[in-house]
Image (cartoon, rainbow, N blue to C red):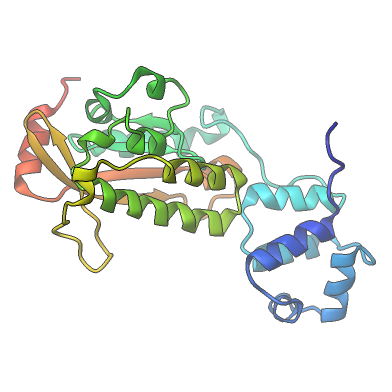
Length: 266
């Protein structure tokens, strides 16, 4: 049997504690009395729709979860969730496709909130070559594909450092979203073994945590990348807020020339 839906106060208290705020601190941020906030959390007062949105904004709650809070308080969801192929998202989809295409001959891909692959340019499949077919079945989780022993982990020269870098990003995402799926994914990834020879490698080129090179072994030699993440900054659609684009740039001339030579004809 499904558990009964939790009341609004339960959700509010969860997010307040997740953000490590006291009732006094949140009340100050939201410009309401601590007494009123306490009554809302305990269910003695029913918040207005405007109050739900104000508290959600002060707690920096993701749009998906703001909808859940609105429903728990007895209101209709405010933020739509539509597939990227929906006509209303044509402009956003075209922007994603343009970014992916224009980034060639360098790899670029788009992922959802759980790191599942949504789209990629023509360079990405070349980096996935040799991965076990089971890991390439949709939906392809790019973190699982990257770190699983049967994925492309065997080709990542600086695997321990890149693994730690991905774990830190995933932890930051968990802090922001409190998503249990991401919590489970992190635990799964942490259990993957790291080859002993890889653990002894010393990474060159990291710049005080600002740039983490991604060094990838290919038949033509080792390629070295740096990556950036692009998101929709003012999204009011759940799908767009949860969409991220990962773009990889060559970190040296050797990699730049190699990628140009690998370019797949249109």
